[in-house]
Length: 396
Ligand SMILES: Cc1cc2nc3c(=O)[nH]c(=O)nc-3n(C[C@H](O)[C@H](O)[C@H](O)COP(=O)(O)OP(=O)(O)OC[C@H]3O[C@@H](n4cnc5c(N)ncnc54)[C@H](O)[C@@H]3O)c2cc1C
Image (tube, rainbow, N blue to C red; front, side):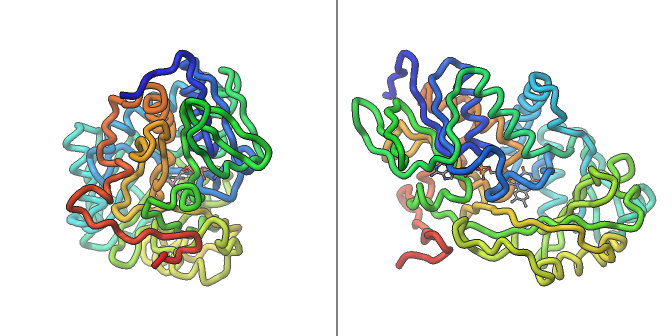
């Protein structure tokens, strides 16, 4: 049984997408919150930078994500209203690929099961509606009108600002090194201080292998590329929605509508090199763009030819099953974790913040997170996969 302290003091380690959202939800429920972030607010070394993220409801990964994303839409709207910032822009999204491939068939399954607005399109219709695209004859596309784009830096700053306004104490440039039981609760240590806490929330993003070495996480390097097509107006939201192409087993890649009337952001989804947040190659080379360009040339020819305006490295933190890790640590149920978002977590950050607040304050949540259990690799009958340590090396 976890007892709810009178006014819980909760330390949140990591104030990226998930930690900022958790700080906000905890503070507005009256908890005493100390947020500790090793770097600056909304920095570009982790997983939540690059100006845009996709949000979509017809979740091809699994229908179990749909109720969570629907709650996230409500919370994004509330946050947007409170801050008067444009955090979510509805553009629609087009999920393209072989009709039986995971992207199209999985999106269709989620759309049907949850009665989400959608339309199935075939190559001739796709070309007629979106002449920028040149799908393969065997392709289909699920068009989802409610999908859109989120602004990640603005979203993190919005959560931080609202958390501070609700009384959270936020510390930047301070790294959590360790925690241990003490003083009837926990003691969370940084280089400069020891913080007493009733509960701890760990949201370290791609630095998770350091704080949570028991989880089988692998950090993956991804490159976000901004291309500069000759006619950028063809890639603005009024002409083309977010698009994602399933070209497995070769690649999955996506693009987002132009936000600056000059560039279009594109990137591969997975397939990047295994690395660590400490040792990642931050520099982008021509070789990083080659495989993406090869894919684009076939199906979005105008972008395949477009010169690179700029490019930036970003990090995924993958679990073996690509499902998140959200829950209480089995070894100490006063510690809630949010990690392993496997390249698709940003859209959920407000609902993950709500869940982390539930877990820290009540020890449970009504949201469906059974699939995300931190101990799912160590349950009886399941062989624990090898853990990836910092640097992507597997300890023996
Ligand atoms: C290129 C790219 C494209 C993506 N596209 C999408 C998309 O379209 N849609 C989508 O939903 N998701 C997308 N994602 C995934 C999504 O962005 C991530 O899942 C999400 O941002 C992860 O948030 P986080 O809070 O876990 O990590 P972060 O935002 O990186 O935050 C972790 C924070 O913890 C801090 N920290 C770490 N260790 C410590 C410590 N010991 N003490 C104090 N602070 C610490 C770090 O400095 C960092 O600020 C994409 C990711 C990338 C890289």
